[in-house]
Image (cartoon, rainbow, N blue to C red; front, side):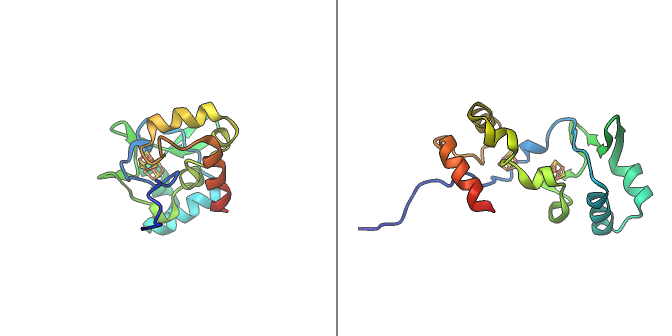
Length: 129
Ligand code: SF4
Ligand code: SF4
């Protein structure tokens, strides 16, 4: 008899690009801008002109056609240097602190296992570190 587990991981990105839809709100820190500038081989002014917009809280990633400007063909154009919040997803403080936020996120992200409990999620988050 096989002992191999068939249980789905708590999180496995399906690369659907759904979390990159919307009008943004991703604020960038200076070091993130520097990394993206270097990765895209742009000068900082070009990065700002082509990909960023000003907001009351600072520069943020622009949107294009209702999605993040860096989303192309369901893929992140800057995946190796994507902003911290994108790298953290779904292990964000709000989802870790609030089971109801975690349950709501399951409806938006097919990478989250529907049957996973919040405890499973916390355990998976601790294993990320
Ligand atoms: S919504 Fe979830 S499964 Fe889809 S790309 Fe984003 S993290 Fe991956
Ligand atoms: S930077 Fe990349 S991962 Fe983050 S929202 Fe934009 S396309 Fe998605």
